[in-house]
Amino acid sequence: MILACQQISKSFGTHQVLKEISFHIEENEKATIVGVNGAGKSTLLKIIMNEMSADEGEVILSKGKTIGYLAQHQDTSSDRTIYEEVLEVKKDIIAMEEKIRKLEKDMKHAGKDELDQLMETYASLTHRFELANGYAWKSEITGVLKGLGFTEDEFQKRISTLSGGQRTRVFLGKLLLSRPDIILLDEPTNHLDMDSIHWLENFLSNYRGSVLVVSHDRYFLDKIVTKVIDLDQGRAVTYRGNYTQYSTKKEAIIEAQIREYENQQREIRHQEEVITKLRSFNREKSIKRAESREKMLEKMEILEKPVTYQPKIRIRLEPSVISGNDVLTIDNLSKSFSERLLFHELHLEIKRGEKVALIGKNGTGKTTILKIINKYLAADTGKIAIGAKVRIGYYDQEQQVLHENKTIFDEISDAYPALTHTRIRNLLAAFLFTGDDVFKPIHSLSGGEKGRVSLAKLMLSNANFLILDEPTNHLDLYSKEILEDAINNYEGTVFYVSHDRYFINKTATRILDLTEQGLINYKGNYDYYLEKKEEGLITPDSGSIVSETANETKVSESKEDWKQKKEAQAKARKRANDLKKCEAKIAQLEEELTLLEETMALPENASSSAKLLDLTKEQSQKTEELNLLYEQWEELAEE
Image 1 (cartoon, rainbow, N blue to C red):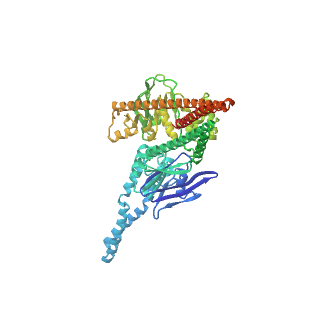
Image 2: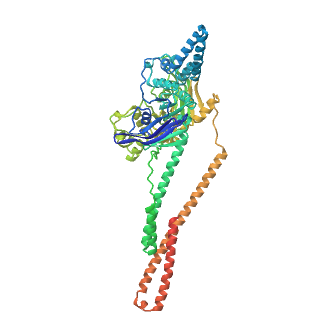
Image 3: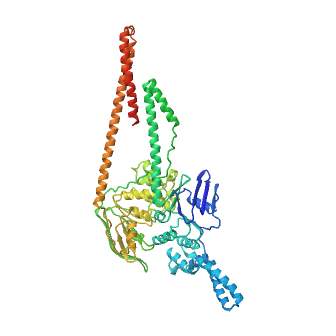
């Protein structure tokens, strides 16, 4: 064990964010902390780094171990160049190297006695230098900076001239080069393009140390982590495996908890109904049975209703009109800014029903293509043809058409007056606006919040061709899953730019990679794209075809499921019918027994022993028959 959190609790005012959080990280283990926005992930990292104090509990770092931390928002100011800044990490190794060079010079001119001592020092120092990978420090710096997206031409740029994202990359590189025993990273893939994220995945996967990361990049988490610490309702639950395995396990656990709770609630209602019915029979034996069931209910350990953030919300995107088969055709599209050429003579076709992801390095012009299609920018050359009956819905984080003085709720309800209050609430909840948040004015929102409102509006637009620019930015993991489901079930066409590889993998039916050579077409999801790219195929094939055997199996399974469902329905109908018949017989016998008692009480019968004997015998038979019916009723009620 290298790091342990024991019973960590933290509150802000009356709101308790963390409740007795406990977990540990082993040496060389790669783990992640996940949870909805506001679950306390960044707070927990700050407590571990002693940047914030916990109300209760303690953080234990193994003796002699080092820890490094990259915050989501941290001070990245510096007057140095990029290279000078990361060079600071290697100053001890550089000092060692300088001392080794000096010893080499001194040994050339030393006497015998002094030479022995110098050689002993030299041997010890070179051994330490080798262990610190000293001979490779220059190539290591170059490799890390290039891996994070910097070219050698940029190494001498001053940090003060860089954007916020570039500065964060410099300090991420500095942290990785320092090689602590455990690295803590808060959203490290922000500001990285796909190639840099892929490089970081390989670096961290092979890192000889532990990693604890907070990230919304699910594909990234799948590639590197083997443990997931889930912050849910202020408490921590640890799962083994990557993000997808965790998500599957958690969903199964939640479904099992809900199923167990609902089954118990059904059983309680059922027993209460049986007890009421047994008491209504008003017989000593049935009353005793009712009392026995009441005692059983009192002893039952009542399960708490499961509380979970796992969304039940489903957004359904429904195009008002079906478009023609040809949705978008682009020929010879070119665009430059001043002397900088973005792309040249691009050709592109999109057909109805396709979900097409446009990917490529930062700065290649992906967003520019979307803006040209939507006439926010003019192309230098080329033709764009929009198909018959195509209605475009466009989401661009920079071009949000919102009314600054309206509230979030009014922005949606005014645009779609037919929507119910509940539908609007559910939609906004899917995009992280809950409670009184929905009444915030638009002008008070951050850029990311405005983006989410715009995306929510677009989901209701009835467009049959959605064009989306980075739709998952500013969404938490659960909101991304809602959006993925919506797009996968959408009957229209989607063309989008995204850096979210998990989102692409879940939703894309085709990928267009924008390179210096033009658009390369991959007919498949992101995993397929990676596979073909690694094979070095410039023109990928048409993708895999589902086999007939697979289809036949699915049809067969579907028929079997239908048959079992029908059999179960038939049994349920028969049981309900038998129960109804049994209750009718019970009511008839109870009425007959009441009449018998009245007949036995008549003077002419009470005075006749022969008549009374016959009536008593009949009463005994009917009572026995009634008791059997009570038992039969209970058996049917229990089925």
